[in-house]
Amino acid sequence: MIFLLLALLLIYLYWKPDLDFPYLCALIAILGCNPCFWSDKDNVLYVTALLVRFAPRAYSRWWAWAILVGCASYFCLGRRAVGLTLVTRITPL
Image (tube, rainbow, N blue to C red; front, side, top):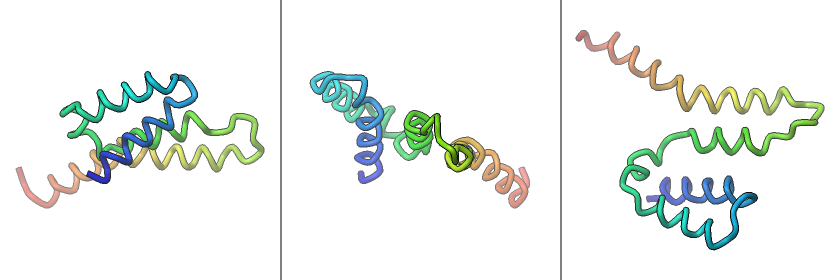
C-alpha cells in the first residue's frame, strides 16, 4: 500500500506543472482505482521519468544527473533480464 501511495505521489509531482488541480485530482483518482496500475506500482519507471523531467539541462555537472538517470534506467529495465538469467542458470529448464 505504501508503494502505491508513493507511486501516486510521484505521478502527482510529475504532472503538477502541466495540469490544473481539478484535473490532477481526477488523474490521481483514476490511476489509484485502476487495478492494472496496482500491479505495476512497484516499477522504478516512475522515478526514472521524474529524474529525466526535472534534470537541469544547463548545469556544469550534468554527468552526475546522467549517472542517476542511467542507474534508474538500469534498475527499471536491466534488473529483470539479469534476474531471469540468474534464475535460468540456477534452475535448469
